[in-house]
Image 1 (cartoon, rainbow, N blue to C red):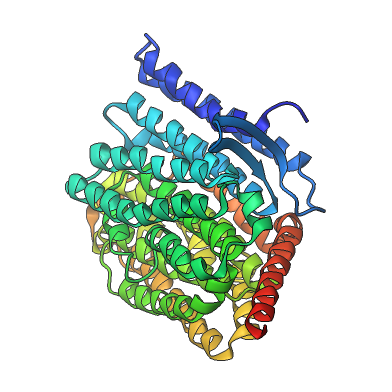
Image 2: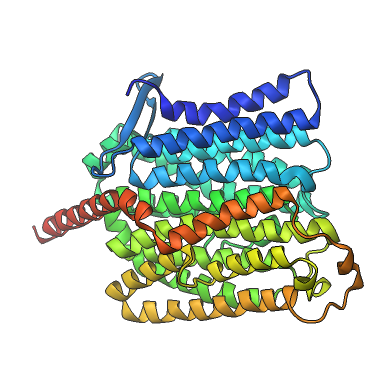
Length: 497
């Protein structure tokens, strides 16, 4: 295929953003329609890309390779079965975020939409990159629009939260940049495919793994690097929280799979116990803290830390079920966390409060909202028949294969997850309607119903029929594990010699 479909996916949102930036028509409605049209076209292109994708091979497909810095770095993009799903998730969530601004963004809407579109371009670029330098540029550039979204359109402590988000994530990534430069010095290339074939010298792998870990652990976020996330979520506008939870956190999980396992298998094997410990702490600690929250957004933010703990746990089981479960968990969490933050946004727009004790008994005034909120609550706690169950089940299967004790402890997180999500739902939806102001609030409007049902349908569909996801990733994950085990065997033979 000669058409540069991946570059089109990356560039189209930026073209839409530039059109909005230089357009003489400053009408907010026009800006929203342009942004929505651009993002929807990008979603259709990503679906067409998924249709063209051949899941029977683990080779990278639709590769575009062009000279950028001659003799040093090429602009190289391509996809495999792992990256295609994250691209589709990104292009699916973005138009829903744009529709959601109807009730949430009151000032400088055009600039807000420009930030959203540029962010979409950068996030897609992360999942397409086949060069370490190109990956790093996309990975770090995504900080800038999110920093602006939180800092300009956020809540009362928006500046503090924006700088905390920016500094936390930037500091970890500086070490990753040093590691990328080191890899070029060691191997003479930053081309990911070539690096897979070369196998990096074992004596460098531990330090390089730790440098990449410093960036991915903050962005995941793993305990104890998670403290920026609740502040960022609480202060960000609804669309910002959705993008942060649904896509940005997944970039780090994707990085663990693509680079930590792919480039540093020996170091990954060595540091697996560390990942297990941090993942278990994240699952249990974040779940217990979530139980204590009075702010709905903060509770869902801590639940994200716990869910991403399952993701990192599954990745480092290095089993087919564990890694597939982690990928499906990330896709599911992208849908469910987006829906939960949107559900909070719905009632916040009406009552201007995120505190749980403001509500109670809203099932009598918002029955449609209550039904959808219940669905996403059950998906978040991993109820069978929802997408949340598939990912957690496979992760725990992989964990039981690799380490029985770790799997048992992680299973406690499922119980705690049910506790804090049902406790949230009980306090917000059921009980007596004590706050008389709630009697005045309307149920879901048409745009809110469209957004939430757009998320509910895939959550239910993938819960009953996850085959499209499993078929897409199966061969790529199997090849990744085979490459990982081959490199470990080579290392064992060298040690014996």
